[in-house]
Image (cartoon, rainbow, N blue to C red; front, side, top):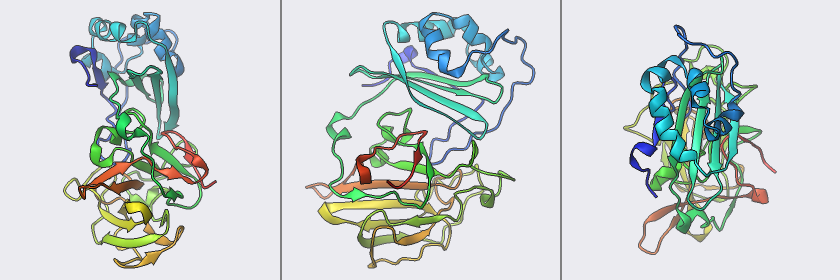
Length: 323
């Protein structure tokens, strides 16, 4: 299923979600707003307001850049036919680094989604509605191996799930069921100078083998990025690939430069240290990228959903921890 013309409202504005691996937002504000709402609409109510046709109230709460980009007339024309006859449920709702992210999805076979970003003042900094592609031929093709999480302690699922709004990877076959994990304390992934990797809680934290296997590829020595910048020329950055039973492989990416402690040919056990979390490659802040592939009959590799210990399927906005 593909988005259809003007009925796809892509108003990602003021705050720009990274379209690589990572999660930083460019900071913005609403200084110079000409029209202030008399009462701010709670983020969780936005889908209902759209269903009820309350577009003027919502448009008043648009941030400055949003209002400049999308008129009230355009907003109505795009959103009204999209939500007509639909019932939406919240699938993810969390706040991090000053922004609230809320995602809704209808529960029909033909999926539709709404994604909203609100700033600290509750102005709508981003709003996107679109039909959501599905891949039923692989959505249930879970790994035969059972994997543990590739870290110690509790980590935040920034990207994970089976639709584009829960997991930006889902749109791309080569990373479709990948996860991105960060560490948070309170509602933030860092403390101090946001331009220093050392300010991020995930940076230099242990990354461990998600299952027993043999190391078949290692890349190290790539510089860590300045937070907010990315290296698309070397997208995985420093990374480790492990071969497991049943023709499956796991890849862990974005390690800290010179932190990897295993070599090609090493046999590892689940939970064994591989290196530490970094910000190398196509990454905007320190995080762990984790995905599993299975070799096909023609020799190609297919990214597949991960079977985790305990049967849990982690999605965006959850705190992931070992069972």
